[in-house]
Length: 258
Image 1: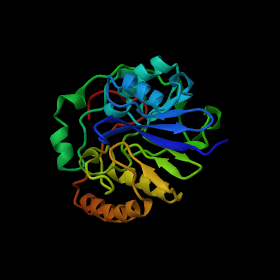
Image 2: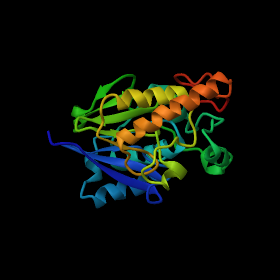
Image 3: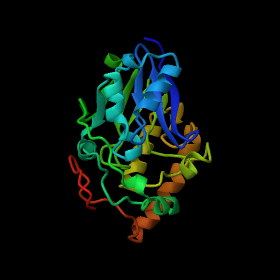
Image 4: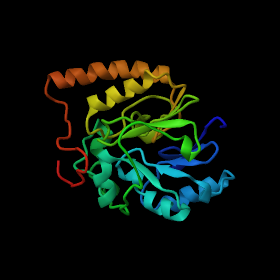
């Protein structure tokens, strides 16, 4: 099987919101942008010389509106099944994210009241329901899905055998990708310590490159150095009782209550 190639598919701006095209024996798409992005992703896949009807599956990394919003449309356009984790099944089947958002800093506090973050997407039921690690050879790429909870209960990442980690919102770059190569938190996390633990577990696997939902590719060594500092910061906040964590965010919890 050929080495898996990772191609960013910007959905908003140059890198503010990203989907990804993974090329191997058959193509796989990871994430589907905000509501209404299905046609844009479909056309961008075609621009890379790939027939969208050849897409074997659409992997959704987590249940936030800017990652699953266009999934139902893209699935309908391509015929590809959606793969997603059972921990975020509620948002997918309701089309509504869990609320309130839990900001990680000033940007999250500024963004959380804005209407686009409370939009309703077209609901769907994933045909491929992920519960643990899952190899993707039967879908045409040398890679595996790895659950990485913390950002949301059902967050997951894709690690190729060549060392590319498509990390969803495990980590981001500042200002939704405006500062390209500097690690940072995304605007929101349901469980910051849980997310950081997932990130550090993935870094321990030795990825060569990180591809994120918001921003350009990140160097794993730089992310590791950032993660050490972030661990200290979160530990201090937790010791002071100032670290917010979502309660009741388990499997199938798709309502809008905290």
